[in-house]
Image (tube, rainbow, N blue to C red):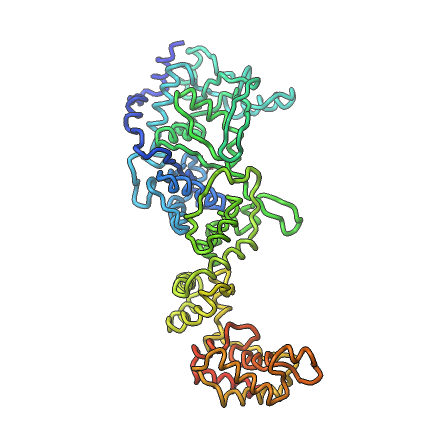
Length: 550
Ligand code: GLU
């Protein structure tokens, strides 16, 4: 067989050589140990949590080592591509603050290792495929879908392995005349890699996440170029990650099954394979069955990255929670370094679990509460303003009407050793501060059990007479005690508990009456601070309004 002739016949339009292509991609000049990682998402319009999970690993590995994190668009499957898919990818990652140093960007490409869209790299892939054909390492296969299905059925009946290998690799050694005849007829064909592997052999692999393992050698003649001249994932991965200088490939563990193909291709091309980190699947506990299962696009809205922005999960909380899933020692580090930026944490693939990571949205809410509780009021305010501008314009208008007043409210209970943890999501803000706005004030005047309505009315009137917006929480409480003792309530809870029959209730009941009148509910942050922010007039109005309806 004249392989050169075959290669010319298949790729008459390819005039570049592998050497010319290699020369376009010089070795990267990076410090010793610097890692080059990439995201290779497909522009399907749907970005999921798994993408972000992997991207965080990529980003940390690259930036922690002074390396490069780049974006490559894997758009070889035109059927799955949607309009605006690339933009969705870029915006999703930038909204999570994971900056790409290089790669596809909104206005073209950024970097010299491009093009970064696989659909623009046909000439490159075909150059390498042509060279494989010239060396007898790849060949055209004209099998139809029906023929492949028939082979599959025969394999099933004979209890043999599925696929294109051995006697089933029917185009592997066909004479040139037969190939020529099909080409003349215009029969569509794919190009397959000629595997020299055997399933009797094992290949050693050391995965950065899964550890040391042995995988079975690949004996299949896999498709490397599809009938439209576009490569399969396998071939594009090998060519691109080689040329673009990727040192660590982080990808989902579903790719482990075809790792032997990739290792084989790297060897056949004479290239050094990158290191691999195969990340575990994100799982959740199914609320109905109580069993563990993969997150599903159909059942779990939280799989979509857009969910987090819409619901108002703070970006740092989502990242921080993903980090707790990624590195088993992160939580311990966070406890020891409550105020350090997350990126100070020494991330390591060694601390990644090889088995499924359990995603728990309640845990995310907890992390989020902690993350928000450590922010200052200005930061919280601006996050809530941004979120509400996009998702709740009516609330946004109220929140931003008097920024200083909103910030003062959001500042309550912040900054101390035990900050308040009222907010898990930005969408919680409205419920937390609605009573501060007359437009949203829908009071529930349910009074503490031990206080009859006529007492509540008197307490409110008495308090209105002594209220001073300049009181401190302590001087306010002194006033509460005084009112309590005047009306038969204990001035401290201990005294009440020691002899409940001697009192109607305790001072806490009395201040609760004021809280209910002012906030329209029984839970609200520090009352005196709330009242100073509201101002004298508003407080007196609320006290009266409540007393009137009791
Ligand atoms: N395009 C592949 C995917 O979306 C990328 C896998 C990889 O990162 O190598 O699954």
